[in-house]
Length: 171
Image (tube, rainbow, N blue to C red):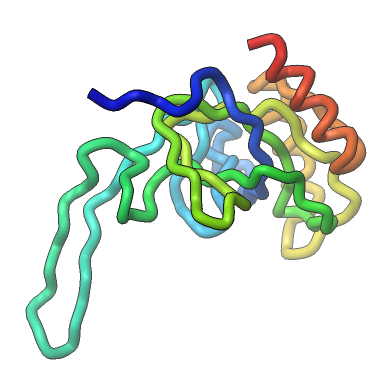
């Protein structure tokens, strides 16, 4: 039996990448910065652990199976979030926001971030500008994502923290 050291939700802060363009549906447009898997816009996103291939030039490729439960100890799977809001401004197609996370949670040694089994985006910081090829399209897509999630849109990281803490109290 696993006894949790905490119950309820945890507020977290992270950066996503918004995929612009008409060729990608809003439901498939909110991605982690470095992962090609989209976050759900219809409910909580559930972590999974994909099979991994480990290569060594002197040995055959080794494929390891997914963790029994994501996020797993000794693995990198899970839905990442930081404990504190990110202070730096980000430019589209990247967007800063917050999540409420629950389920199995792996806290990291320095306690600056965690990996969760389930998470739901609750708010985003209004973008101040963009870079890349399609910043206007990314901003329009972000507003559609916010509407689909029934999430909040705030002006800065301080307001993001206050909004997220208020949402967490409702759970």
